[in-house]
Each structure stands twice: as structure tokens, then as C-alpha cells.
Image (cartoon, rainbow over all chains, first blue to last red; front, side):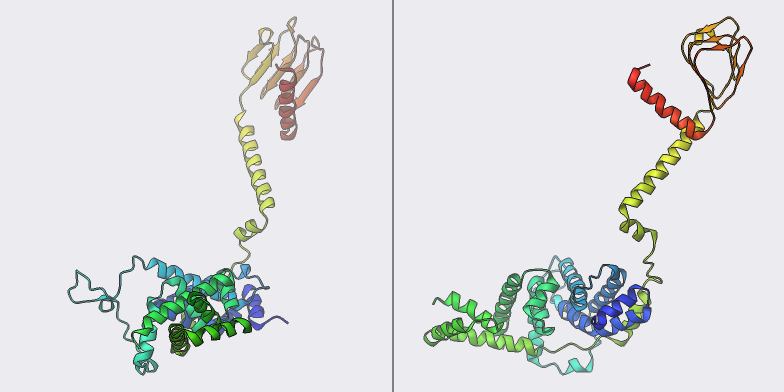
Amino acid sequence: MKPIETRLARLARKGDQRAFAEIVDLYKDKLYHLAYRMMNNRQEAEDIVQECFLRVYKHLDRYDENQKFSTWIYRIATNLCIDRLRKRKPTYSLDAESSEHEGLDGYAMMPSDDRTPESEMLLSETQRIIREAIETLPPKYKSVIVLRYLQDMSLQEISEVMGMPVTTVKTRVHRGREYMRKKLENKL
Amino acid sequence: MKCNAAIAYMHDYLDGELPREQTAELQHHLAECAGCRNRLDSLEKTDALLRSAPKPESAPDYLAYRIMKSLPKSRNAKTWTTWVRRHPALSAAAMFLVIMVSSFVAMWNQSQELTVSGDLDHVVIRGNTVIVPAGQQVAGDLTIENGTAQVEGDVQGNLTIIDGNVTLASTAHIAGKIKTIDRAVDWAWYKVTSWFDTIAYGS
């Protein structure tokens, strides 16, 4: 008996739109969490989730059923996030004051995202600091840290999603953790 | 144990991957190194903080709808491009066939004008008709394309007529064979064999 996603994927491949809608339903929140943590921006997170499902839909034929469906879909989403983060370059430090706009730092110049849901109004100072520290991680550490801590993946699962050896994943988790330690140490 | 090694152990420990033996070594080191105790303490705090990081809210309700709307209408898994991708050899063969046929047709249509090859000194050409007058001797083969042959004299080789016809007078004498070719396949075959003849004997 194949897992439910594999069966849904098979149906969707044959053109069953309802089966695909179920896949969307199963994964939209997980992928949105991932993308939101990676991008720290709702609009971009929504775009990435949409793009990810579109790719999944187009490339259903290429899905190898021996692989876990979740690994496949996470890989697509993670790659989309990393690509986007890299394209954001050249990176300017958000804390640096811009010479053109006196007194405005990067945060003030970002398109404001005022759709703050109630759940986030209650964010404590600590939580805000953690989030900001994650935001400053370089993409290659950010992806493993987000997968490890926010998606609760094992090192093995991360290595499958990222398509890299477990040892590399380990090194990145360690470096990412050290990075976070330095960021958080003097703030908390 | 050096502090560098201890830090690497700490990370493995936090990953839940430090074997029992090494854990004992680490404990031993921590007992005598205050710096590393602090380090582990702050790494553990970082770890706990990361785990407690707030899970973001769920995807907005309209997202699923937007996604389903954005999908292309049909998955069109069976378009010819996928077929081509799956059958590269057949596709190449089909492509080859198309090119062969089209060039063949092009060549076929090109040669509508009269072509005569052979001993031209002893023939008379009138319009589309090639006449070997009575009493004349054509040395060797005579080939006529897209024309009519009217033979009254001697041909000392083969007479070949492509896409045309031949009229033999009672005085005609042909030493070799008379060949009339008017079908595409025969024509192609003739082209190929004459090409090989050219290679084999030079002409």
C-alpha cells in the first residue's frame, strides 16, 4: 500500500484535479511555514507556495514513487526559497542607514506588511529577537536551520531534501547554531 | 581533550548523535573547563530558543483557491513534445523520413527539362524530341530524361528513357537494352545505381 500522497499524485497525474486539490490542502500550510520563515515576508511566501505547487503539477511525471512525496515537494520549495534569497542580492545590511534616505534604515524602506494577524500581536520580545536572528542567517545555513528547528526534520531527512550528504548538513547545522548563539547571546 | 574538539562534541550532543563513550569524555572535559561549560550552556539555550520559535500562522484561506486557479487547464501529459521526449529514436527516424521525402519530392519536381546524355554528335534534338537519324551511329549509351526518343538509326549501347517514351523506326538498331523508366521508385533506383556506376567506373 502506497502512502496517500503517492496515490494522490498518481491520480493527479492522470488529470484528476480533485486529487491535486487534496495535495494542496495537505501541504499548503507546511510549505507556507517554510517559505515564510525563509523569506520573512508574507507576500513572497505566498508566491513561493503557489510557484511550488505549479511546478509540482507540471512535473508530476517526473516524481519518482520510490522517493517520499514530502521530500520531493520540500526540495522544490526549499530550492525556490534559496533562489529567491540569492536573487535579493546585492544584500544591504538592513541596519545600515541609507545615504539617500536620511534617517531611514532598511526596515523602514521595506514594503510594509501591515496585515498582522492577532497571533502575532502577542509575539514577545524574545520571539521577535529570535525571528530577526533567523532572518539574518546566510541562505545556506538558514535553510537547514529552518528545516531542522521549524519543520522538525531529522538530519537524514534534510540531507534528502537538500540533496547533500548528511555530513554537510551536520556542518551547516553546527555553524548555523553557532551563528545563532552569537546573535542571541548579547541580546537575551 | 582540547576545547575545539569539545565544541564539536557539544554540537553532536545537541543533535542527539554523540555516542556514549564520547559523551563521557565531554563530561570529563566540562568538569575541568569553565569556558566550555558556559559554551554548552549558551548553545543549549540557543537550541531551546530555536525550538520555541513561534510557528507562523497558517497559509491564508484564499491561497489554495488561488493555486488551483493558476494551474494550466489541462495537464496535457500526452502532447507531442512529451511523446518526442519519450521516444527519441522514433522521433529522429520520423524526422529523417520527412526530410528524405521532402527533398526527394523537391528533386523530382526540379528536373522537368529535357536532359540528354551520351554521344550528342549523332543525334538531333527538336523541341522535346531526340532523334537518332537513319544511318547515324550513336556510340555508347544514350539517356534521355523528360523527352521522347525517336530512333531511326543505330545505338551501340543501352537506350534509357526517363519520364518519356520511345518510338523505334523499322531501321532502328539498338545493341543494348531499352529501358523506360517513368515511376518515382524506378527513377530513384536508377539514380542510385548510376551513382554507383559513376563511382565504380568513373564516367
